[in-house]
Length: 312
Ligand code: AGV
Ligand code: CA
Image (cartoon, rainbow, N blue to C red; front, side, top):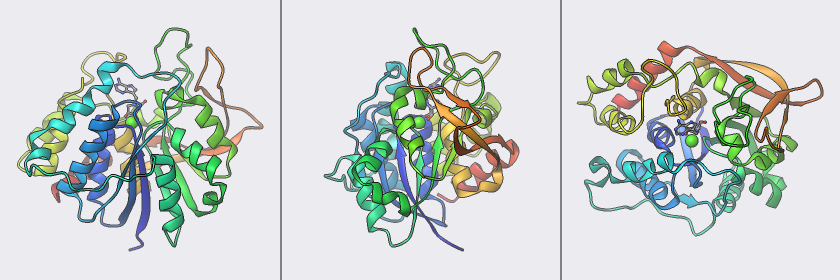
C-alpha cells in the first residue's frame, strides 16, 4: 500500500469537521497538517474542534494552523455558528484536555513549511476557499513542484450554483464566491487541479434515510459522531432550498482516499472575478485545464463512510 501525504485546508463547517474525522481513519493517508480558515465557520471553535477531533480519533500528532486570511463575500452567520456546536459536543470534550498543537505560523506559511518539509510530494485537500493556497503560491512558488495534486471542493460548470445573495447572479459555488480572486490566482499556477464540483456533490444530499442509517449504528463511536454532527443541519425532505445540506466536503475527502468512487472529466475553464458573477467558473475553449468530478457512485459512497467510521 502506498501512503499518501495530505495537507488538509478546511473552513470549519459541519462537513469539513466530519471530513477531518474521516481522514484520521484512513490507513493509507499521512496527515501532514491541518489549517482552518474562518469562512463557513469561526476560527477559534473551528481550530479547537479540529484539535479535539485529532486527539479523540487520530493516531498521530498533527499540528493545526489558524488562517490570517479574510474573505471577499461573507458566509451567513447562521451557517458559521455550527463550528461552536461541534466544538461543544460532549464526545469531543470527555477528556477535558486539548492536546494537538497549534502552529505559531499563519495557515498559508504552515502549509508552505509542511510541503517543503515532506521528502515526497504532498496532496492538498481543500474543502473551503482557496485563499491560503493562493497566498502560499505567491510567497513560495517553489512549492508547486512538490504538490502532487490539489483536490478542491468548489466550483461548478452548471449554469446555477449555490450562492443566493444580493447583487449576484447565482452562477457560483460558495467556496469560489467567498474569494474569487484566490481561485483566479490558483488557476494561474501549474498545479494539477481536481475540482469536486456541485455536479457530483448535488448527488449526495443529506436525507432523513441517510441520517437514520447512522442513528441505527450509533453504538459505533465514529458513526455516532457523524450522526451528532449532521443533526445540526437541515436535510433534503421535499424541495431543495438554500439551506439544504449536501455531503460536499465528505464526498471530496472520501474521493481523495478512493478515486474509484467518482467519475472525472477534463475541462478548460475560466474564473469570473467581477460582479455579478463573482466565483463563476465557465468552460471556454482557451481555458485552464482542470479535472472536474461530475459523477459519484452514491451507494458505494455512503457505504464507504460507514465502513471507515466503524473502525474509530
Ligand atoms: O458550497 C459548499 C461548501 C462546502 O465546503 N460550503 C459548505 C461545505 O462545507 C458552503 C455552503 C453552501 N451551501 C451551504 C453551505 C449551506 N446550505 N449551509 C452551509 N454551508
Ligand atoms: Ca467547507
